[in-house]
Length: 113
Length: 151
Image (cartoon, rainbow over all chains, first blue to last red; front, side):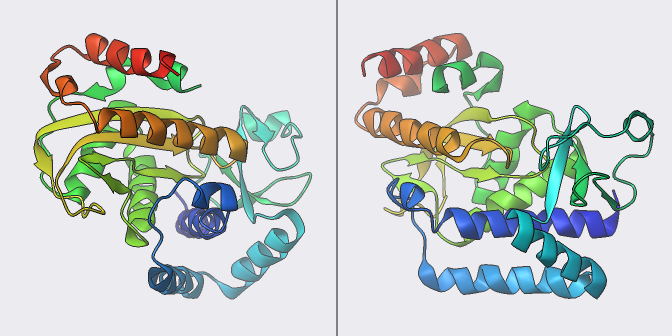
């Protein structure tokens, strides 16, 4: 897998976790969330950010501001952000996830599941 | 939803793990993820544990995470006869694990509702001991299904 793609996935998973633990419905389930440990999680996030090329991170944040996420999975050839079928030529292409790609419709970074 | 996620091929009745890290890795085995995906999911689970243990006490833990690399919701149930030091809320060993994983695009409520149901069943199980004697995964799944039907 492309290294920057791997970093973006880790960044996405941390962002989703940070969002989820603030969700009142999640809070109601009663799982332990130590407020002071959130700082450690943010530190781990920062380390990933620093390992990414600046242009990629800036694009990730732009996409996140627009769509609520910077990267989306492609399942069955369909981008799970815009739900548009990827072009057949791209779907059939080998070596998926070996380079950083974006959806040809919405522009979000993509990961082929 | 929870009933459908319970599968006998995703039940481990004699976990070998002794630590939290080993337990999370062992619980991922029945999903047969490719190594790259497995490492990413393991990392996401560890990050969730880093902000507070999912060991809810009374011998039960419900590790859970969403990850971009997952394409469906999955549940793995694990039982450890010797117990695992999982840094649980009551600091006691964990004997029963419910690992719940979900993709990011899974509707939020569905994942959280399932998580809530697992927590509910787990609380019921915490008042019982007989599930520790079951040796057949199929029987174990039926045992939990019956608890769900009692709702």
